[in-house]
Image 1 (spheres, rainbow, N blue to C red):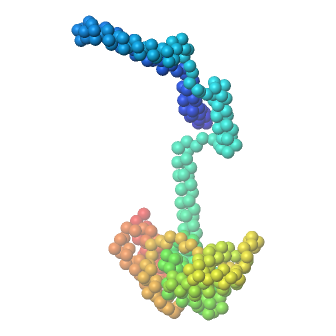
Image 2 (cartoon, one colour; image 1 turned 90 degrees about the vertical axis):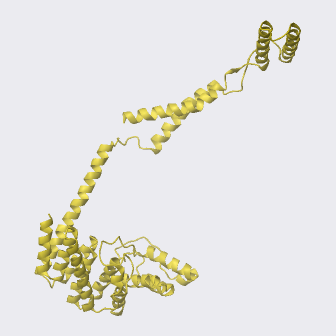
Length: 390
């Protein structure tokens, strides 16, 4: 802290000097122009005598030069007066300069104490680096703890393969870790146990969208339409159907889906701000007047939890996995076809790892996927490859 104040003091003095020194220079006395001219003429008389001695001038030429110089000296004396005293240039009052020298630092320090944080201790670079490393280590430990918990839950699901709630919890855990392929496989297991429950279909469709980096594929669109046809009320279905229509260039259909969702959402639903923005953008694109979407509920402070989970309007970056073409090629698929699609993705991952056997993270993903699919023997083989890389 002492070093900081020393630097501040030096900078303050420098700033004051930068402003006051030019003002101080203006107060120096200024020699009258006549005095300057007289000195020049006297030097010229001395120079004439030197030229005469060296033979550069004749006596007549020297007399003529002296006469002309003396005439000019007389004219300068008559114009200004030889007895005039040196005059001062118009400058700043010394009292004002003293006031400025005191006032500028005082105002600066006052503003700093009002707007700044003088009580905050110094943070040397070494301590900041230590803090950054500690935060990184804490985050890494948190991720390791989460991965350990997920691994334990996956192992438990091998013992309880008919536990629908367990599969959903495992799928949500994979989603939070951005392991979308594993999450899709877990949701698929839950769907087969519940005869495709609409409440499970909606998050499953969202996972397919996340796998496509935000693009609503034909497979995901078919899932969301199935949610609507089965009477599901998860807001993600209507929202992503609107996104799909917008991505296909059908802005009017997208607007219709979003307005229906807005009119059936609670007034304090957390997804309404994003929904309003999309509705307004679609209306502007179509040239629709504001009254056409005036049925939207007014904005109100949120007073209670929403009735359903909000849609993921800003999908995070997707981890390496299937391409968008892979997802879109799936098309309208049955439950069995969707299961086959996921298994084909797992198979491609396995083939890629055979070509790049040193990818430990890839083997970890493959082991988890095999265990979720119930292929325990293959999962054990992948686990052995993981242990060999440690």
